[in-house]
Image: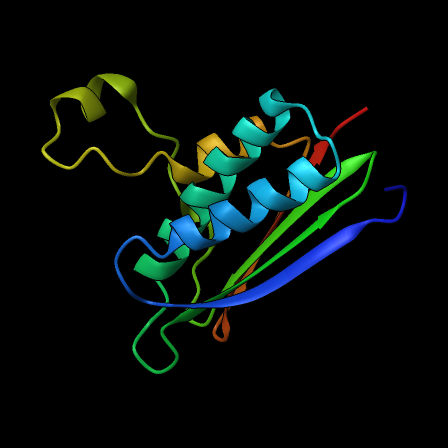
Length: 138
């Protein structure tokens, strides 16, 4: 079990498809004997990243590519969509007081992913968005 394990999947834009990726992550983590606490945190990251990616995937290629690489030391979660991209620096941090009163409660994704990752890399351009999240396990 010292050798890292990897899973790559391409998800179509259908309801609840993020559950397929979460199930794959769970199986890999179990195989690698990753503590449930770390796996639970990673499942939240994966779910949020995929939901965001599918929301912004666009119509030309409405799929999301997901890759997990899990070793004894870390979990690397990579999620890519093929939408029009955005400028991450222009995304406002959510204001909790405003969000509680707002009709639409969404908009916490990037902040949540950043806060739960040990390393968070986002690259976005006209060909889509790539997010890499790393969770240290040691």
